[in-house]
Image 1 (spheres, rainbow, N blue to C red):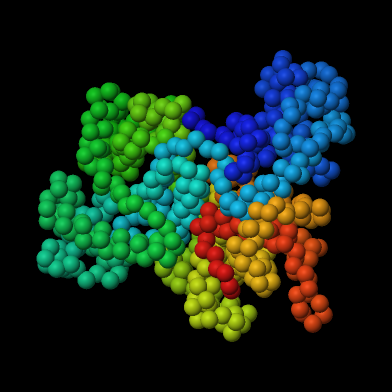
Image 2: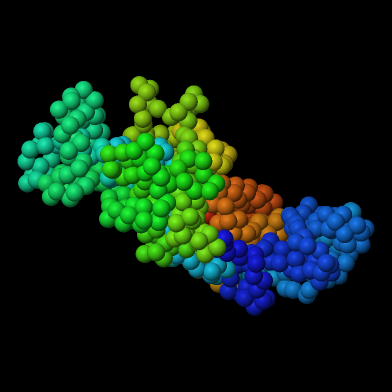
Length: 597
Ligand code: ARG
């Protein structure tokens, strides 16, 4: 529900003057209409447009349609072909095999699109703007941010960038775990260790150790445990001293998280579970009044259709839970933030939780599936090279800061091995090191099907061959350097494009242009299901197709002494278009590019 598919709208030829065309989506629209006018009696026929070896695209609808209508497939193909309305995209069509309709794209249209791309940059596919609320990263206060949160952070940032690029109004929320029962023991421990915490901020440098100490006391020391429970009650009753202790602890944690976000270039608005306290009280009351809560061994639970396990709304000690806060939070995002698309990026272990949450929200009525879209974006576990859960040698969870530090160090070694330190200034070298390190960590995550577990390996992600950020970032600098070594500036390339010099006569030029113009369709696809790996596959494809082009088509011709004898303007325009597309992909993946490395 509430889904906006850009391929639903067929635009007039004029609307692509300033905008990149979603060619596949447009062809789907064109053929869908053709089928409708040829066979009005057909009920929801599948349009089936694909890339083709013999042509640019092909429509395979005739076969299935012929079967359901009990007709000859070749005749059906022919009739579809004859019903295709005149349009700016298609130059010609023919029929092959049992009824495939081959589509050859209009060269002038493609040339115009490449020119636009260079002059105006990558433009988003047509989209109806929505209010999108995306919940990602969301680590828990006083606990270490771990690789699971890294996945949420990287995937969430990329989805947020995608949504913003499409023109949506995006709210990026960090749903911090800042309101659990763990605060009882933390505050009690704080009172003992730093009795002056209210007046002078406690010098806790390692919150994780502090957490472990308080947990050990909680488990062994009965009177301490009792005090911890009392502290939770006082905290939830907003006792100023307890609130102060809680604030201090949150502050220390948030500072640590911020360091990670800064390094990764991630932007988030902090809004933890505590924000919803009064809203939780309200929703518990109204759920009770509406008769939606059931007693279960002292707990109050809520069942909904299609979910086997209920939500726990009130615990037997009267406290609220993760479920309670998510109910209040979802309502707040719909009714106060006016969210039209709610996205939650968490590990796949929480799929059941979100399924139940959505079902309960629907039952209460604040979530209407036909008006609001909700997506849980689950991801798999990060594994070590031994294929077991990613841990340090001593079996501890890996701290994110340590992981990123190791990435930097490894990236630096790699670049030194390639003697980049000799070719670059100190500043350029540092920039390249950072881009490669963080880029590789992000790309390794995003290029895998997120729903699956993935193996974290610095060796693999820093390899300069294959589908890695190290390789792709390097490929981009090479493309950028082609015009630079020919002494042509970016502005000059743009004005070459303006003069309309793009020619696509060589087979590899044509292939490159067609590949570049696939970007809008890729973006529409990844927006639909929020799987980002097709964007990485596409980026890698662009770089491969570029290599094919570059190996076959001279851009800058030199004589045997290395002197430039001819600059092929037309092809510099294609280089520029390739760089623009690759830049945009990197940007959407949250990866910084460099001009030299
Ligand atoms: N704090 C949770 C965790 O560490 C993630 C929260 C996700 N967001 C939400 N609204 N439940 O797993």
